[in-house]
Image (cartoon, rainbow, N blue to C red; front, side, top):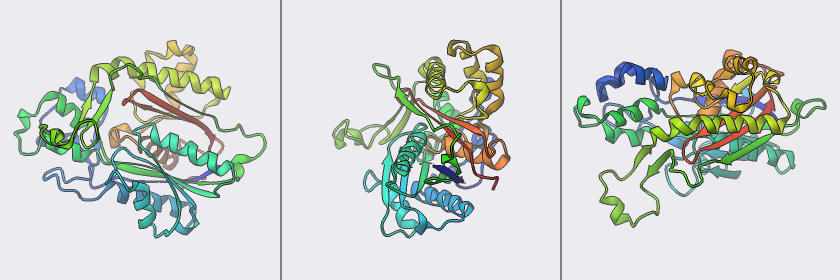
Length: 359
């Protein structure tokens, strides 16, 4: 299996922290520095809350860019595997709308309902189907629309009346989509190249969710859901994620190194969904990393949190796309994709040898 190209789509103009402060009030400087986000893109109009695009349309735009870079047409694609936690509808799957917008009357479509970990899980599903000979080409897509859940937190309110915990949520998240084009065989299957290794696990059994998107499900009768202050809302356990998040990262890293037989010195790029390298680095000792390995790991992390915010499903492929375009992910590199998701403290990791020349 080879990754031929990536593509990305970020809706609208970037919304920087100064503009967001005028809408929803300020965050303390130390808190703002801690979340590391300087700008993000929202599919809603920040002033009115009106939708300017959708999850599937962003996904389609990212897919078209990836196809153009790979020199392929939509008709060349046999399989679409898409991850999102924010589809337009519970059914049909958002991936089928991407199929339709690409002009494909027929295609295999699989959807993963997940956040940050989903795109890596989707990539492994596609990889295995290509390796089994079921399909020849695949599109793997992560797309998320989080801003529609954020608008009710501040619209129609004085910015200084917005609760501080709501401001933290507003400043953290962004929308977007990213795609990867895969092809069976190719240089990535050549002798001497390490086989891809995958691992995923939820560490949140018996633990309060780090992130909960409430509403629109079947937890309560619809009449009782409609009586809530907000029909849908996003809830963060900030204290829980701060304390337990590094453990998830460390456990995922240890698992991937053990399964792959790689050492940190063997990895050329470690692609993460968010930055927080300093936040996690205090836990490197618990992963059994030497000071030398810990210092190297910080140098090879590929992420773009400051420019896009926390984006959920597209986070890893957005970072991978940015790293590929900037030349920090190069042909021949051994790449570790490691996604950490707060929902039920899930990690998903995949190693691969990068083949695509710079776009």
